[in-house]
Length: 124
Image 1 (cartoon, rainbow, N blue to C red):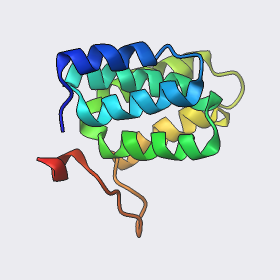
Image 2 (cartoon, rainbow, N blue to C red):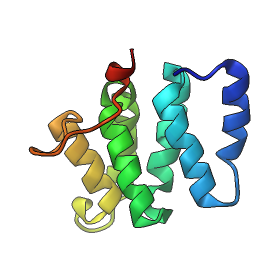
Image 3 (cartoon, rainbow, N blue to C red):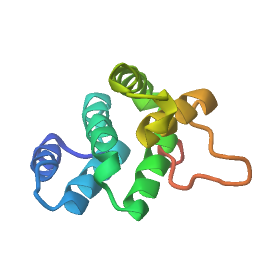
Image 4 (cartoon, one colour):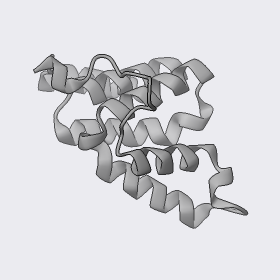
């Protein structure tokens, strides 16, 4: 499923919703069903909002970024580099940076024994 330009414009407005779960859910949909540019914008939003999300949404964000790693690899690298510059103390004491570094080191592959369902590659 791909979002049309009009659907993306409507969804993009939800990224600014005051209700954080709504904004994060909109970004999850965008990463899974948008063009590359839109995926990257939504992925950046997910990463920057990660620490404010409820644990269940954090798990969904992790799974989404893992499934779409090839499309959002550059955003992950940029956000990890920016977080490294801002890190105080041990860099990996930042849970978001720790997750991004793990994603990079595994190239988005799920932990052994865990399968990601709903991959974009499966949808084509």
